Image 1 (cartoon, rainbow, N blue to C red):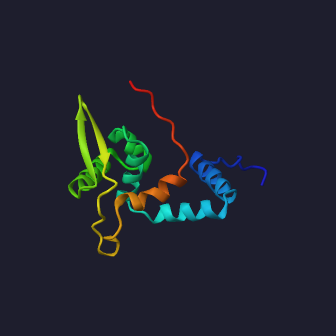
Image 2 (tube, rainbow, N blue to C red):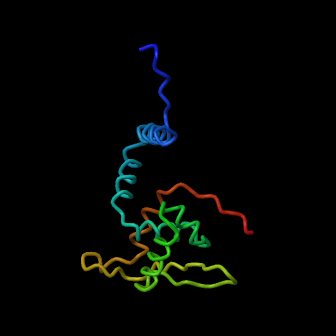
Image 3 (cartoon, one colour):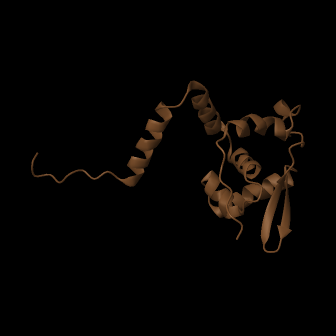
Length: 134
């Protein structure tokens, strides 16, 4: 078909292709961790982000978990109400303190602490760069 223009590949398609190619190069253990992360709730993703980046702002956390700032704020409030986080205010910024010693409230996991749940997932994450203080 000589008369057709060349097919344009969207940046979204290119990004997904890169992710698939990267996934194929991972070890079995790394693939298992990715599958486990896909099973986690948004609450767990927010907790992981706060644990990995203690000084992160809501905007940073929202970007990390790929949610809107409004949804992220709602999740942070729910986690704070449940006792997993404490919000600290310094000037105009909020900082979140994670309570790793807090018992989980789920009946099937009430024998675990929050730190027990997050530790294996945090150990497997690649190190993130700290943002310079503004």
